Length: 314
Ligand SMILES: Nc1ncnc2c1ncn2[C@@H]1O[C@H](COP(=O)(O)OP(=O)(O)OP(=O)(O)O)[C@@H](O)[C@H]1O
Ligand SMILES: [Mg+2]
Image 1 (cartoon, rainbow, N blue to C red):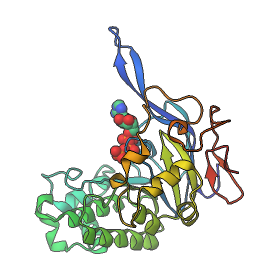
Image 2: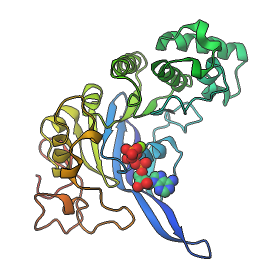
Image 3: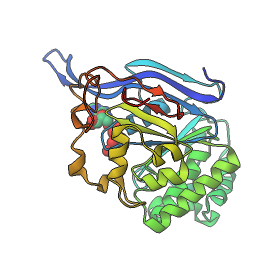
Image 4: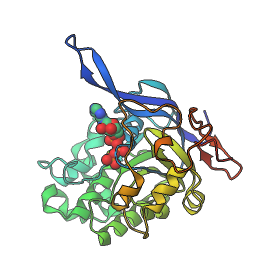
């Protein structure tokens, strides 16, 4: 395993059974991840982009240990434990539904350490107060219930909760897309500041290219459960090399605009992940498809230091 890597994924596949015969045996599968190779490096922010259904959240769940791979290898550095240890935490898109509505905020924030059991209520209370201060919540508000907070404040609660078990890696699945524009920037800046203070590693899933540009050191572009391009964010966004990355960025005419709002009609649709295509997965939609594209494509690092899954790029 790479010495600086916290996690290493080798040819990871995840499929979900969807059709069953009368014996209850699966007759069909949704192929959500189809050979993902990826290192997560200590202290980095790794952005994950790609259109709806390409497997981003499945990848997040896999990293969290909430999803087992159907095949492939997932290695963790010793420091990065499973989610109930101290290694990993997650912040979800919708802070409304990811917080238990019946619990006062201080108990929500300390839920991850409550599982560990070896601490008293007063220790947890003072931990909640420290974390509240770090994420910009008033400690007088800790006895209130989640619905008494605004969306931005609720996302601060989620972040404090993620920090409470001192994780190495935090997986952020669309952390600001449910928030007002003005609040988004505050939350992103908070995440950046916390990362510096605590040497955190982030995996950031986002539809929003300007969020990824602002936050990420590296970016992985996913298509139909595979990474098609992976490299330093400035390189990939300034000079996309895979035809899919180009299409994805072309469909975001203004900075700040969400990928989902792009010119979907020009891009066509993601092929079915029940019956995987032969050869290059992007072939059907690719303006450059031709000779060689009927073969499966490898993700290869080229001279520019970017990994691209396309035989035409060298
Ligand atoms: N538990 C499940 N059972 C069956 N299919 C699933 C399950 N979870 C995800 N899928 C399917 O796997 C594919 C990938 O889903 P995933 O949620 O990872 O996509 P995503 O990239 O996060 O999309 P979005 O941007 O819309 O959140 C989709 O086709 C989805 O329908
Ligand atoms: Mg998702």
